[in-house]
Structure formats: C-alpha cells, structure tokens
Image (cartoon, rainbow, N blue to C red; front, side, top):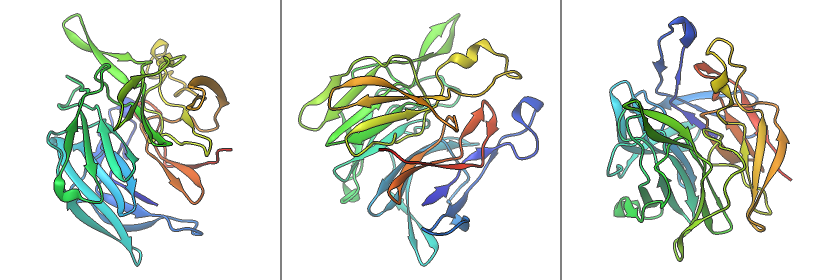
Length: 296
C-alpha cells in the first residue's frame, strides 16, 4: 500500500491559527508489516488529487499545492521497497477535489474544481487507458447532473458510479456549498443513467468507495451536512453512519454506525479487505490512523 502527499497542521490546530503544511513524502506498508516505511518523495508537495489503483501502480491525478491547482499525473510503483515516480500524461485542465475509479483497466475521472477557493466545480469527465497511456486523457460526455467536488466514485460489475458530493450555488453574490443526493451510473455502451436519489447527502466519504463481492457499494462516514448546526469549536465530527447501494436491486439501505467517522480521505482494496487512510476527524483536524474495512 502506498500513501503519498497530503496536508496537515503540525504546529497547532487550524482553529488556533495553525498554518496548513503540504507534504511530498511517500510511505509504503508491506503485507505482514506493522509499520510504514518512508520510501521517497513526490516531485512537489501537494494534496487533494484523485488516486486510482492500477496493475502498474498508484496513479496520482491532479490536486493542488500552495501555488494552486495542478494538472500533473504521476504513477507510483514499487520495487525492492523503493517507490519510483513516473510522469504520466497530464490532465487537459487543472483539477482538485476530484474523484476517480478504474473500470476495465481504464481510469475515469469526474468533477472537481478548476480554481482555488471553491469558485467553480465541473461536471466534465476524462478517461485514461492505463494500458496505453500514450493516448492521453480523452474527454467523454459530461455527467448530466450538477457539477460537483468531494464526491464518491466506485466501479462494480462493469459499471461506474458517481455518488453525492458538493455542488455550488450563488448566494448573496457568493458561491455557497450545497450537498448533493444525486447518484449516477455509467457504462461505455449506454452512457449515463440517473439512479434513485440517496436518502441523504454525503460528501467526502472514503473514495473509491469499497464494494462487496455481491456488488454493494458502501459510503462510510463523510460529511452529511449535520455539522452546520455547530460552531467550529463545538463540532463533534463527521457523520458516524454508513449508507450502501445494492446495485443488483438498485436500492439504498442504512448500513449502520461505523467506528471511525472520517472525511476527505482515500480508500483502496488491500489484502482481501479495504483500507481507509488518515482523513479529517472534524474540519481542520487530521487523523494519523489507518482503518481496515472488511465487507461480507
């Protein structure tokens, strides 16, 4: 397992005026090991990109650093405990807070913000064939729904899913966040299909979302908007419930409470289970923990 880049507030919390720090450090965790190994650095300190696990390695897509949003794409691969960073074709546009999933060896990227400060969000869709990256990113038909960022994606049984996230709407002359309950599926043959609305909005849950063997997609924690009624100082943390989509019946179900509610974090399949790495305990407060997820 490879973990690279990110941000935190190492000196003091954000609410106490702590400065956000960006990192370029790369860590690996090998099967059977109890600790992470520092294994190299990214070309620059940055975070908030999409990640996709391919046969070739971990694809780090877009993101942003102190200097702004990025279109860079890098493949991180391991050999003898070291990580090799290989440039891949860049995105056509700079994007951060986007999401990706892999379907039949192709990496699909949806949504995200093109500029800092949540001034915009897009419904554009890009695809890269990881087996033939020299062809570059191809733009596909846009998502018919709202532009969004911090949404969840998954791939199950030959179908791609885009779930929830955050849209923007104008309010008093400014862009305001609006949590979304829209859900969509995509196949190269049929294009986009609108799915039943989510029972409640979820954004920034672990993504790509874990999928069980029988095709159930799990949204674990994330931001459901309930923290709006609290001040930053009294915010109890993010949603501690889980929601699942049964893709066979195309029905949403409550999947019960979870032990470690987090937001804004990646997830990957690893050693027959899933791993959710770090993320936010509450706005501005990072967690160093890594949690294992086992699905029936």
